[in-house]
Image (cartoon, rainbow, N blue to C red; front, side, top):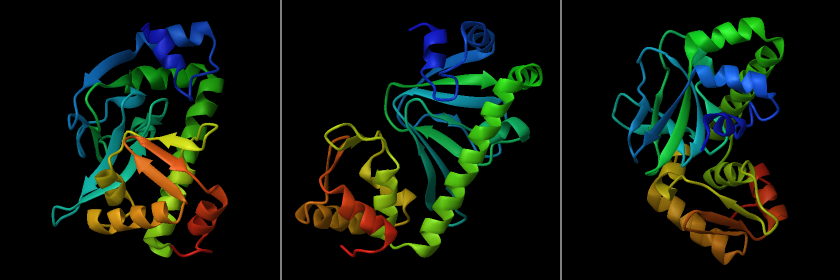
Length: 225
């Protein structure tokens, strides 16, 4: 697919005109990744930020005791590592979740030059940074104040659903368990309770929401499951 069309698939650049997209294309590099391949590593020199086109990417850090802590799961159309535009190094690791993951890298210096010339683009990138900060704040709040079922319910509700109430994620159940701060075994038992309670089911890449009001109540902590 043409790189301009791939750039337009991003939520950040969806409403840019053709001339703006052509300028972005000049500083964009397409990368094809296999499962587990690094997009970047923590401490690596920051060279730009990224758009996920296909597949998915997990953002994570490794604790001193070697435990992986998933910070965010990036789905197609989302941008990531925008903050690295203003940093010398990447603050976390990023890896492809599945084979065939495609990302576009936008060169750091080239993009900063575009920001200096285009006020509209500047506002969009700052809005993306604000959204990222809000998501990080919400994630910290969830881990601090919410129980595991509420954390998972909040995650599912953050994903776009189709008319049947189905959302799709490239993340594995193990990855999601790590993101919400629990073990695979505890998470598996939670999924069974949610399925028996007719709240949701998770098969393959599809999470089907069967009872959104109850899922919302679980996310708020108003219902135990």
